[in-house]
Length: 167
Image 1 (cartoon, helix red, strand yellow):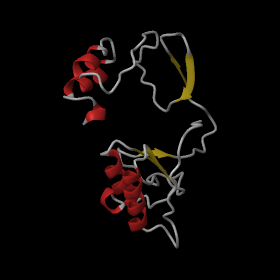
Image 2 (spheres, helix red, strand yellow; image 1 turned 30 degrees about the horizontal axis):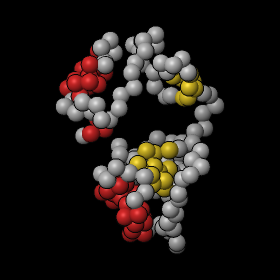
Image 3 (cartoon, one colour; image 1 turned 90 degrees about the vertical axis):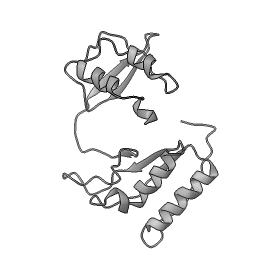
Image 4 (cartoon, one colour; image 1 turned 45 degrees about the vertical axis):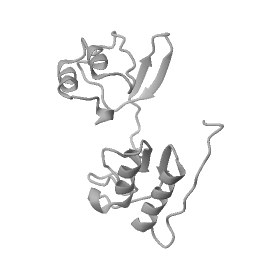
């Protein structure tokens, strides 16, 4: 996976998982200069963003360019059981679905990468090659690349003054 990766591991759950311990560990990880924070900490699905230590700490991390990843919790599969669901947290969970929704990405060099997706708009033109958009590109560059993309998606991108990853 990442043969030269350096791991920094912080224990936060002692007799329970106090938000103060979680926030202290995230603060320390930020101070230590990590690139990714991966938290396998359950939570309460009803927590508001301002009462969830993982969500609060993740916002601090993301605002400093650190990717925040967390577990979805173990309360499912019922509705409204997702933990740490803030838009700035990459929330990962298992599924009990017995099927795959296969998706293949074809690169310009004809390499094909297989993955999975939960969303494929019916208006998506699979025959059109789209460029990879990089964060350092200007809005004019990436909006120009959207010619021929489904109208609602193109309009949403044009209405945004900056790319979503820079907002």
